[in-house]
Amino acid sequence: MEKAIYGIAADFEAVHWNRKGENVEYFHVEPSTVQYAENVAFTLEHKPKQTITTTKKQENGQLIIVQKGSLLFFKFIPTTKDGQRIYRYVKQRKLRQCSYIIRKLASLRDIKTEGKLSLAMDPKETIVINHGVVYEICLTNSPRDKNTFCTINANHPLFKDIEWETNVELTATDCWDEEVKLAELDEQLEQLERDLERSQRKTKKLLKKRGILI
Image (cartoon, rainbow, N blue to C red; front, side, top):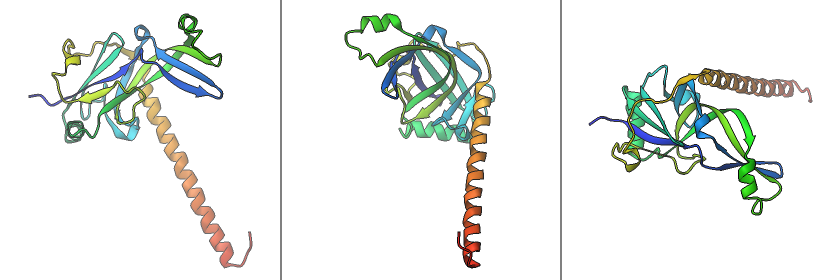
């Protein structure tokens, strides 16, 4: 029996919300406009240092991406010890749900839906449809979309009609490389801050030792 992780990473039509000051923005993604980056990463908790594999560099296994309607499915086939370790986490239910990251290309007011719900909506509330590029799928126990999940059960009813062959076009810009570079820059800045704090503490101790007040 083939070892693999299966899951639903996104329901693009699921509605989420962000609070912006006193205003609330409800948003969802238009499934028909979803694009996919040239290199889609498969990670733990959206952290570049916990990258499991990518569609370009399949170091720990093969990532298969399937979009069917508004749902984003995936299958991960581990090929290394690290990949099999992730498989065991899912098997043991240490990892239970999924998430994704989309780089927004456009955010359009959903005037039609707002009109239908006008009596129920507060004036400070808006509804937005996002268009964008998916560049990361991740395993997480704290997803925004609670309908996501991951499993090792290939016979789960939701996978009944899925043909496990990537059916999306990976042609957009390589957002993942940019994400990794930004994460590396954040780490460097954090290290500089730690070094600066350490230097300041040493300076204070030295001045105090010499009886110099600051």
